[in-house]
Length: 143
Image 1 (cartoon, one colour):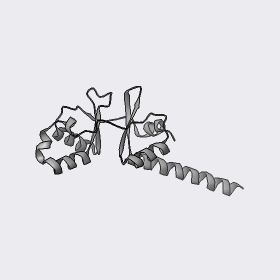
Image 2 (tube, helix red, strand yellow; image 1 turned 90 degrees about the vertical axis):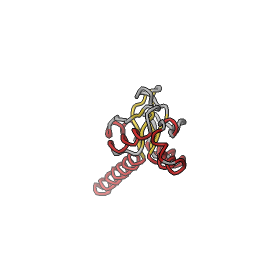
Image 3 (cartoon, one colour; image 1 turned 60 degrees about the vertical axis):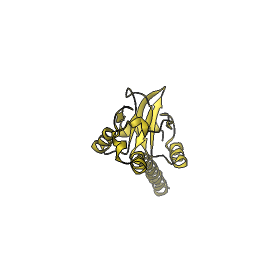
Image 4 (cartoon, helix red, strand yellow; image 1 turned 30 degrees about the vertical axis):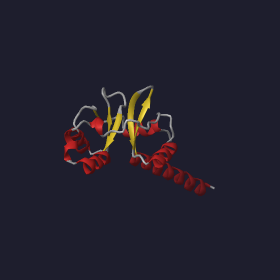
């Protein structure tokens, strides 16, 4: 299965936050949308970085609550691993595992198309395995 198929099923919605917004605002977006990461973007259509709940927790532990009033850009990961819509779910799962990342923006020609979480990847793989199982059962029953 390709990432484009996964995005068609889950939808292209991506919650973004501007890099100059306070971390407190990013936390509000994470809570409101019940998500674990935000794409950091100046205009909403590009990827300038990514910030996750874990980034905030680590910063709070290291620096205390004053980080909440600082800019998202101070916590974000600027070198973001992205994927293209034509990438396979299997390859993306390997990348996410190897680099210990849970959210990957989908980008084509510099334009943000969506975001894929590790949960999306696991669900897609489980769906693929179920489909393969169903085909095998059908084959066995018809022979």
